Length: 353
Image (tube, rainbow, N blue to C red; front, side):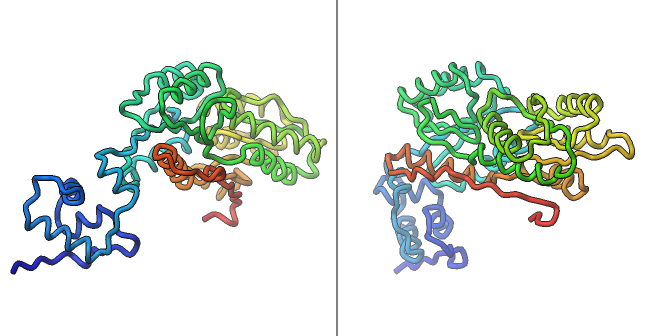
């Protein structure tokens, strides 16, 4: 009688997966697949070893294993804007580093020029339904993008929007924060920071072509005009989330408008904001500043006192929610209508994680 042992030191603390079985039995994932589905090409001794590993682990087949039995994966594509946007690059890193965390799901990432609706529509039209089951896209608000999303749905591809929504399109769900609420929160904070100092407020945006920036501006202006009428809102600067453009444009405004009391940066480009503030003349009053997304640069600016508050959305939760939603849509499983809703966090220098 031949006895086999599996590596009990590798036993997982949570529900065991097919990856755990493969590690414990010392075989490849494809070998476990063949054993699970009674396929040829596996030696009898190896079959026994895999079966023993499954028993000792308490492995049970689940929906993901059923996917493997059908010899398919959920093939997902994330389309993100290119450029130096720290938050978007954080989403990209999260997808790359955790690509193996989702069982029986392959994830590809494609970047397109930021705020370029034609390039985004072209990328969506090029998606092959034979190789892609679901798409998550940071949408620009444009008729050509809406048409491309409609075509993608007609071809049977599941679609969710990410970070920036397009509710008038045929997308199935949105994953992100309530951007109007985020803008209202920013106004409440900045209005209080500027209390007692009448002046002008500068809004720094990436582009009004993306709905998240437009909605943040809407919520911000609603609250600031209603509750802090002594603050005059200047026309927004559109820096295309480029730190050099933001620095140059903001520096120009600060030189022309010495009575600026506050700055709301509702997109990326926060490094440009910090650099423009660093260029203020010695002794000049410093505007209060509220920005979005906790990055190494915005964290440092908070610690140095250049920024007063950061409104943050968790990229890990955002990516996890998007993957889970697409998996459910692709597999025909019920979806919680609130599954894509991400809460905001407000960080000051005193409560940084």
